[in-house]
Amino acid sequence: MNSRRDFIRNFGIAGGAVLASSVSSVAMGAVPEAPTMGSPNTQPPMRPAVGRPYNPVVTLNGWTLPWRMKNGTKEFHLIAEPVVREIAPGMKAHLWGYNGQSPGPTIEVVEGDRVRIFVTNRLPEHTTIHWHGQRLPNGMDGVGGLNQKQIPPGKTFAYEFVARRPGTFMYHPHADEMTQMAMGMMGFWVTHPRETHPLIDVVDRDFCFLLNAYDIAPGSYTPKVNTMLDFNLWTWNSRAFPGIDSLNVRKGDKVRIRIGNLTMTNHPIHLHGHEFVVSGTDGGPTPIGSRWPEVTTDVAVGQMRQIEFLADEEGDWAIHCHKSHHTMNAMGHDVPTMIGVDHRGLVKQITDLIPEYMVMGERGMADMGEMEMAIPDNTLPMMTGRGPYGALEMGGMFSVLKVRGDQKVGDYRDPGWYRQPRGTQAFEWAGTVESLRRAPGTAQELSSSSAQEATKTIEVRVRKPSAGKPHY
Ligand SMILES: [Cu+2]
Image (cartoon, rainbow, N blue to C red; front, side):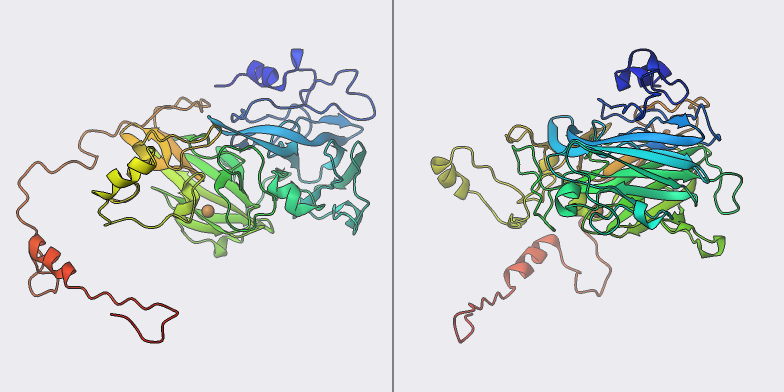
């Protein structure tokens, strides 16, 4: 468990001068200090030392921004700046973000809080911040040119409003958005309810993360900002599996996961082993009567979804985007399908010309998960990550919900891999397996050798687009 001391160390502040409770004399100046985070690891939830109490969120591979209280207003300081973010061990990206990381720190406040956020621009171009989903005065909405002047490089602007409704929100620039969001500028915002709320349950664990995506050519560091669809890194909080931390809970915990989508496509988020309900959107908590059980929920572009469930099944449960291309890293999409193509003979001829040529995919792509393939520096393997039983063959938007019965109260350290009780795991059949039997009377009722014969008789018709007549 990360201790309070670790938390302070991670801020790089001796003595924790800028923690929410204690404010240094410097911080009592006109603008509060801006803490910065050096670590890409999940920081322990930040319990509020001042102001109304609440149960803080856990930002996956992220942290919550400390604030100071000044004359009854919660003051925060965000610094828009270039950052280096580790996407997963072995790969770093040169991004733009806030206070040392992309995404920026999570901002947590309580319904009814008056909030002042100072935004200092250390980017080479102007920026703004839009507070997605908030009720606020029009001039605080952050659309550059429409609601305010852009924040020029080197300048600091202040946003001030009352967090009027509880819920799940996010923040991002509304200035040169295509570039600034492709570079990783975004962050989470949670407004906790002021008191017991009929539609907002008290939970034991409250996770949050943003869905984001980058197009970073293998071997390079900076995203291509003009890409619209063909991204190659699908990330949660700018981390790709196996760089995404697990979601650790105790058996019997009530769990909430808040997800916001700032990519260019939708992501059906799928949880194994449990059913959940969508308890809220960026529009607020959903009415009880509108909630039904799901195991996958689609998070469309610009949307937020908040899911809730009782973690009552022990184990290591996958949670991932169900688009299979989104659980891979840095893949090329213009690779031909090679399943069933016999490379024998051909490989020798090619390797005479290109010694490093490698046959890929003639039995499927699973070999990729085990392969020690030569890849450029600063590039993640396409399918990677190891579990207790071998390669996971995953990347991108994938993590594990770890539910444990023997976890001590309040101890949410990574418990390691789950050990399935004897007799509860898929096993290799030790008995004899007779020749393939099919149900009688079906077209498939063939021996394996006659099935092969059958495939040989399939007629292939090739039609060249240039030719008038089809060729057989
Ligand atoms: Cu996806």
